[in-house]
Structures are given as structure tokens and as C-alpha cells.
Image 1 (spheres, rainbow, N blue to C red):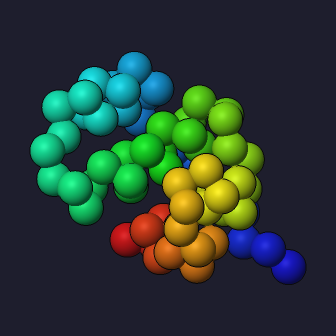
Image 2: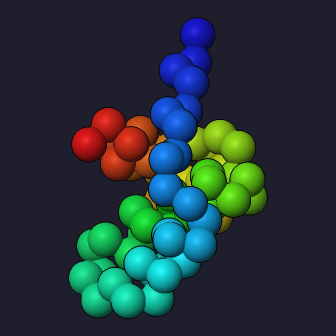
Length: 65
């Protein structure tokens, strides 16, 4: 059975602002992941992984932190 995605408490507008101001290259894809999930553009880990060009296990690791 698949683990459900955790709720994303940040607002889409707040995530957009953080994305525009983020300079750390390691944080940018993680913020993009949160944005995609919060905005509804991606519904599963696989969707996010495909859009960001990473493995779905990477998405799971990012969400576990």
C-alpha cells in the first residue's frame, strides 16, 4: 500500500516567493516539489519526479525530512 503524501501547509504564493528568492541550488528543487504538490500540478511522487527529472525515491527522501 502506498504512503499518502503529507499535507503541504505553506500557501502557493508563499512558496512562489521563496522560489524567486532562493539562491541555494540544493533547496530549489525541493521548493519546486512543494510548489507542484501545493498547487495541484502533481498528485503523486511519480508525477513530481517526472516533472523535476529525479527518481521517485528522491522525492520520498525529500518529503521524509
